[in-house]
Image (tube, rainbow, N blue to C red; front, top):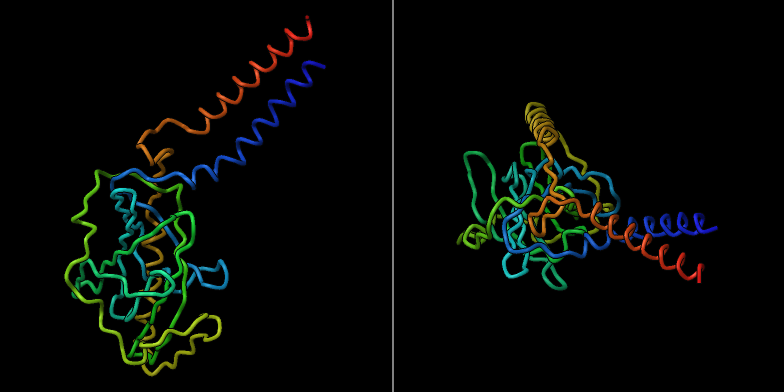
Length: 253
């Protein structure tokens, strides 16, 4: 009877710990510093990968200062993404540009994020003149918390946007249509070679993203590599054993 009680208590404690751990991890706050985090870009209406996933370089950087998180990421094919907006209160605003490279056709943007465990809704406008492609999309950035890696102390200067306006948007991009599911892309190909180049560029970017490693740090909040799960399990087992001893003594009395 006592053995059955001990085993039942242990199983219950382990299950409760495993279910509570993800929530506790998500609720934890990153300490001040600079991190990298992997992410994917998904459609607004479901968990399918968005076409825009191949336009963003992985991983992103996260700058934490006084508890405030700012994500910094690079856009590839910058000329195609003529508008990029992120949440600000009840509306969306243009994400500040940190730097840009016209020769490489890239630009780096920075924006505030309150919780990396929640998808970040954003809006983009994609224009590819050579194939008469012009559409608005609502997308979601989904961050992989398990990939967070501390890469150094906080660098406020690096996270500060440069005095530079975002890439000029076309007149047709002044309004954002949402949700994206109501307007599907129907590109009209006027130049076969341009279409081929577009497809090749997207495929190359996808392959590049797939080859990147995903470093994992068990405890990015402190930089400590001690396994949190093991510590919690040891505490749970210790508590169970102590309870078992107390019950044994009471039964003898």
